[in-house]
Image (cartoon, rainbow over all chains, first blue to last red; front, side):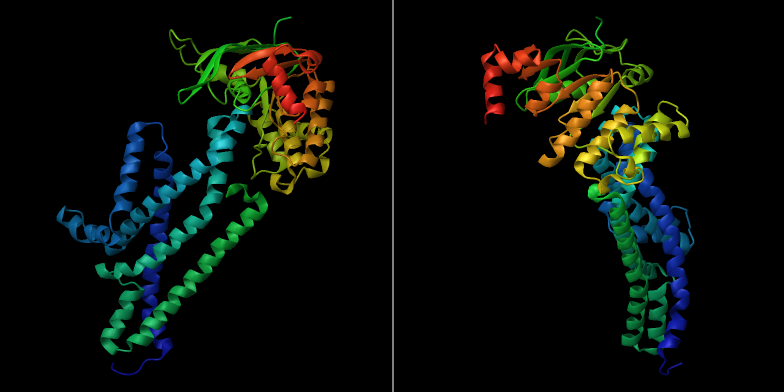
Length: 222
Length: 256
């Protein structure tokens, strides 16, 4: 194919990679968010076993390298008899990793609310379960908007690592193109523009949402 | 007369520092009791343990016929059932130094939350009640506002209305004007004065506003180091205190 490609051609060629990147990112966000909330709550449980399990998960996945986790899922699990499709390897690795960070955010946000609101909850005699989802959780969620937004951005920026386990994401498609045709500066340039085109609006959207909540509820949630 | 609330031998220790040591207090129905004393004397802890925001280590609490036992130094009492604890707390209301409104709810939502979900009131009824109480504290126009759109004084008046909505037998006020700008103190004190004139609710008030204390109290208690040093009608405490420590404290408060 050895001929100069236009920017449009390059974009068209890497586009399937964009689909792979975002389908994995999307499913990893679901896995990660569920884990973040469950493990975050669990780490504050009064049940010792639940607490220990959740804290162990958080520390293991936060304390080891994402790349090693990814390789583990890709190369080691098949040796143990568990063969996953590349899509699921990416989803699990990314979701479990982000979930551990998210759990710490959830835990911190819940702890940050509890102090003086807890006094009012007791004085008004509001039942525990109701108090949790009507008073503590919404305020914790407001505190989590910014850090969770950052985490989402980090996740997106981690997706190129998936190319290393032969998931045909954006970077993978780009490198394919470079191997065929050269033009590295322009291909990598296009990739960067694509990442920014998604990352920047995402960051702005998160900041706007946070500002909106702050205006409504006041600095009290910070 | 049978007291509406009693604290019997209440002890509370924070990380090895005893704050209350066998503290006793009776409050008569509709009585207005004011606690004064230097900071660290345990006044706030009296309120917080009575409300069970903090659980006492030992002693007994009783309000309007519901009793909580915490045992004594010889042994802990069996754990109080949730139902009894909730019945006990339903007799009390508390207003805090930092207002503690729910920042993500409108003023109306703040006021109807407990009446609906604790007292089981119908929504329409609870909203009517909320509007009546807000009118009473002079904030009818703030129904749909969020707490952060209100001044400190207004937030504190909402917090008082919120506590009243549960129709408590005893209302606890924990330094409710200490976090306010000086020009906002008066409006909150006025609301409490009006309440005490209109309602038969008993009040236990911790304050550093000596003029207000003198005016509103049926009984004034001077506390130091977790104990009652002297108590009596306000004329007596403020006019002719017997104990030299009471006189020293009041001297500093009244003529700084």
